[in-house]
Length: 146
Image (cartoon, rainbow, N blue to C red; front, side, top):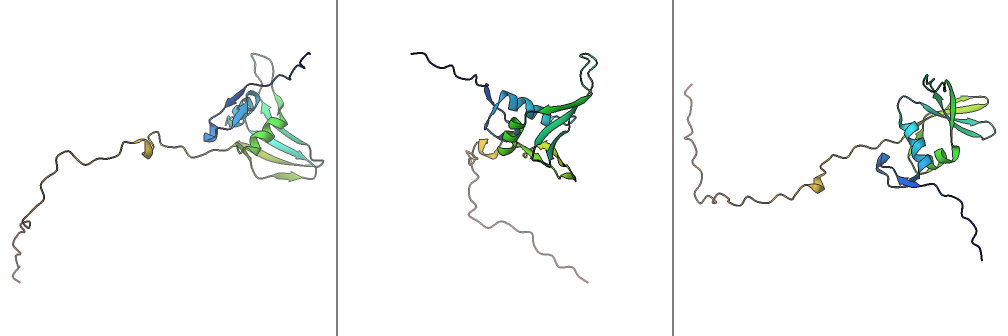
């Protein structure tokens, strides 16, 4: 009996962006890196017929002679990143045939390097001063003459 060949699966990695441990495919990781680059604004265009397109402007690269055009990102990967909470959409700019949203990565507040739970518990000093058995001396109260 022959086994049927299984489709090739993409390697899966876990990106720590947003402190999430949800696995992301290698393509999804690449897409997330493009979206996270502050110099590369990414937009989602939703057309009137419901078609969705994620794209960004690719600047001209004199070394390769490529660029100076819009480049599309894989829609299924971007939708997966949005459904897992890794990217978010900005306010829509609407015209009669489409709506355009800015796509941004979700940012979470940074956790301090030394979290309070990681610090050792405080213990009492090994040698403590003996407790006072007599009241503390107070300075005599002086009255000012007017």
